Amino acid sequence: MSLLTKTDLVFSKVYGDYLKLARYLGIGFITTIVDWAIFYLLIGYTGIFYMFALATSYLTSTVFSFFLNKHFTFRNTYNKVHIQLASFFVVAIFGLGINEALMYGISNFLFSGSSERALMASRIIATLVVFIWNFILNKRITFNIFR
Image (cartoon, rainbow, N blue to C red; front, side, top):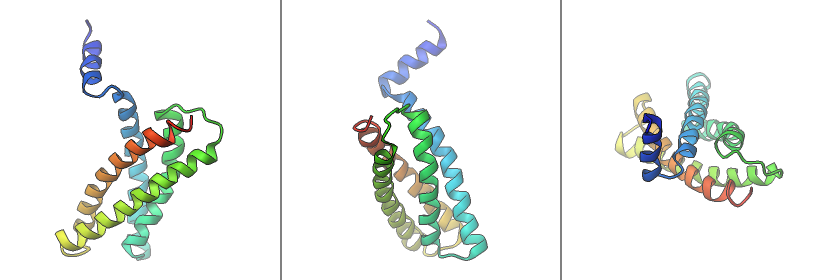
């Protein structure tokens, strides 16, 4: 048995759909870079309040995320893209709410302020939590019900 086959067997026992999760993670990494780049450009060069910058960057990267995940992660061929996009955005809006609440709570209560370090640490924690939320709901709803 080859190393690749053994690895596949092990990962399949841990989480049967691990390849989909890995692809979602890869897309998530790319769209997180887009999200964070927009976020830091907005707060660094325009002086926009970080909560507004977060919403703008998050929703912009959500559009990229939808199309990449539809075609690459879930290999979905459902023709009514507008319905799936709406579902994806509903999940994303709730994710944004979680993101905003975590960013505010962590940066203001855990780190006592909105310094760049506090915002970055808050952003990392919030991103990880919302990543899990979005994956579970999009897998079960957006790309499962609408296929």
